[in-house]
Amino acid sequence: MRVISRICVAALLVVMAIAGAGAAWAGYGQPTPWQIGPQEAITPVAEDIVTFHTYLVVVVTVIAAFVLALLLIVIFRFNARANPTPSRTTHNTLLEVAWTAIPVIILLSIAIPSFKILFFQLNTPKADLTVKATGKQWFWSYSYPDNKLEFDSLMLKDDERQKRVAANPKADVPRLLAVDNELVVPVNKVVRVEVTGADVIHSWAVPSFGVKIDAIPGRLNETWFKATREGMYYGQCSELCGRDHAFMPIAVRVVSEQEFQAWLADAKKKFASNDAPAAVAVAAETRKEKPAAIAVAAK
Ligand SMILES: [Cu+2]
Image 1 (cartoon, rainbow, N blue to C red):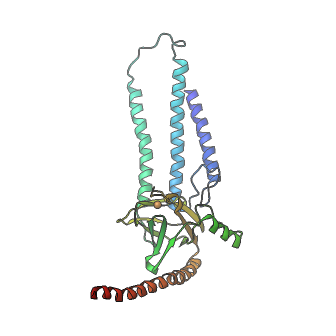
Image 2 (image 1 turned 120 degrees about the vertical axis):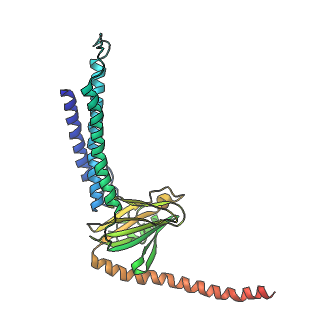
């Protein structure tokens, strides 16, 4: 028994060291080299998920160490050479009750916090802002329904990233993650995210927010987050959706309330002027086509 408890304690210490180091190496808003833990949590939901994850790592490590210890004892103490005349003992009521009850208790200790986090994730509190993310092959469209604002968010190609760095050497444009138009949200505000797909199933996921939800055509899914720290947070489409699945990143910029209002005013002008010429051109095109149609009908 002493051997078993020693192995368990040693395993626990290793896990705690790894979990601690994992937190130190964890990426801030994006993955980092040698990162082994989850990305840094910046929403209440993500914090709960990371804590639960650490707890699970401890549980599985202790169980694995315990089973390994039992196996080693059986291999070395009870092999044919060390133990030539085996005991014929069968049934031990206390042991049988214990090996039924203890796993049940372990499973309950996992299930209860797990369901708590699920309900926390799924019940959207009163939202300060609603945004809608639509997954398309292969980019995201974002809209702010209360502000009549809509735009597309496409991954920056390598030459576009180089151009941005040339213009501003401090620009942080991580490969395969940086986009042309980020989703911008205010800090410390509850943001409701409505998620849908325009063609096939995509998935809107941001690890630092603890958010991952499928974008399904014909269905409006809902999730929420409350980012407690300003910064850039990246995610990727997390449902295999076709050829460029790997190239439709999600970039969310969390800013102060004033910065958000300023961005909103700018964005309304920027994206409105983008749409207007197209609408005018389509209208003109329609007008041009009419005489032709009439001509055909006359023939
Ligand atoms: Cu996708």
